[in-house]
Length: 495
Image (cartoon, rainbow, N blue to C red; front, top):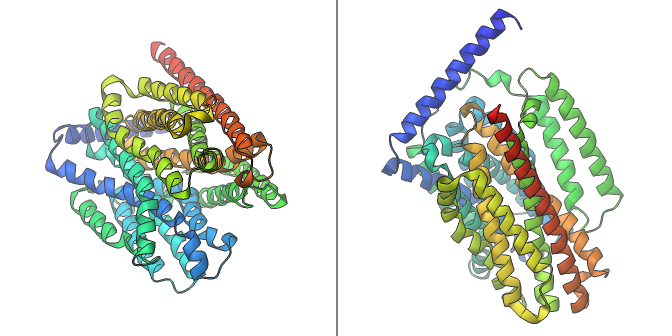
């Protein structure tokens, strides 16, 4: 390397160290101040809205199918458009926030989400609604990627876990609130209200963020030329192909799914080649050679895959094996998000006190125990026999998610917070998408029936137990990855 390159790298390192010290000093000087609390309130609402945007629409699909005289394959795009926009763009908008300034981009994302919510509520046709939902998903992608990135600029490093726990709690509340709030709004004011309800909340979030989030500290035009447009396009197309391969077909995996999966594999290969040659890559290939970050992303994907099993398997086990009605099934399934909401903040405080890496392992251990219990419970134990292990799994998940996010975001460089936050969120979304398809296929195969919705109670119970045995194996794999990463990090630190 030339002397000029060395001096440039030295200046960059010095600027980075000064930036980190300045941020830590600013955050540490004002812990618990009203400004910090109001900033966290704005970030919490941002997380709540993006989570609510997914769950509240699901419950409205039957009503929307009737209103627009559409098939399930058509109305499912109301949900898919939102999820695809988030999945395909969340890393790119995180990187864009690092370049142009996270505050101004987050404010734009909240504004876009709010405006798109109004357009959804005013939609005269199904396709208008689908396009508006895609725009709403773009706003949600910005909100999800940059909300976590802002934690490092808002709270002291020693309180990162508590802040991450709060954000996890708000996400869980959004997930839990969606079905009940959506059902009440549809039966009352009508389907348009499930989208229009976001407008006042969005305006409040925008006001809080505008007033209390720290201002961007760089020239927004300075690095804009460095944005990787080709990498962004390739990643978006690759992720879209993979997401569609995993979601289209209502449980089947036909020629179209296979073609999309092959297209995703080809796109991934092209993306890696482009990023290796890009002057300012969207994702630097070297990032995957960082053991701690790579392990965090891998474990997050595996854990989210397992969590999807509770949503895929639970309704069939509760209705077919235990004979519960729709209302009771919904009530029992809400126990999961409720436990996550109650666990999030305490989990963050525990991570701050005992260390994020240690609590990551503790969360995975609890999830393993819960999945093993679900793999052996007899149906004679009824609802309690299902809910108790489910609570263990969900509490373990909340601890893992909070600790894992804290471990990654607490030490990430300020100029990489947006893209790394986007990668963490993407790993979770890919796990959920994969879990819906893979764990659903495992459940159907283990039940030995062509249609689990009409399967015999004993067959569904067997399928549930085998599915959670597979889930336990996946969590054990995640535990091995996390433990191996911890050992490798300790070894490197000792050298």
